[in-house]
Image (cartoon, rainbow, N blue to C red; front, side, top):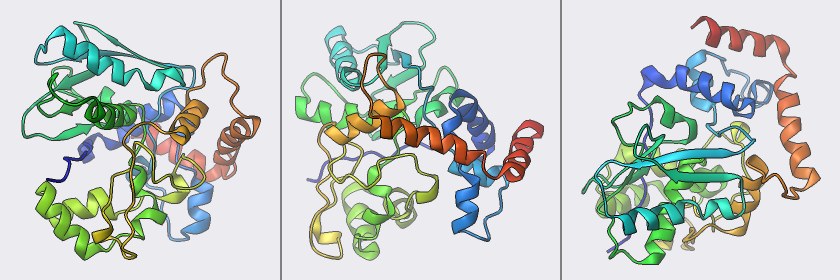
Length: 292
């Protein structure tokens, strides 16, 4: 039977603008690049709702230190194993996850039948404190280590702000929509609309903070079988954090002593400068957030 895959959670529409405002306050790089969007989409209207949808959700660049709680009191060895896999990201980037019994920022459930999912990055701050921000459906110590790598590290990537890599337009364009709807309906129980949302709607390339080209081996990429691609060739997908994952995330969350390339740092700084390029549009949009 095909592996169960992630279906990331999204905030309700009523929370999007406030969550986007918070994301930009935490990390200004999250702000949607208005001048680029307007240049490639002449009809783009910078409403606060539209900007909110295009806002990314990365944490601040001086390090991510998040507390983790477990809502169903799993045994100590399972908690330690989950945390160890979450902290696999921290071997190369400035991110740490620490267990706490009170006021956890990342709250993990193992609700059977609810699938694998996480809210994206700073969006976890918009979730009620008694509700989960991540679900690891039925995970126990009997689950293989490879599945811990594939699932826990993937969901932790979402918590760090990473969207799905297979949503990059270059990869979405390889997928046959009709075959995808039939496949994911049969294997995951998704409706046609869910497949369109989770697989067939590309991330806006002009708003994406990410690697220069798609990485089909990323831990954030679904494994797409050749039976539903237009060429018959599979999109391999990631089973663990790969080198490009680490390199990119180290550019967002560099370790204090890390030697992130000057070109990467320059690119991120240029994003901030370009965000100031269309000053009038930026002022109008900021006013929308400030004035509600």
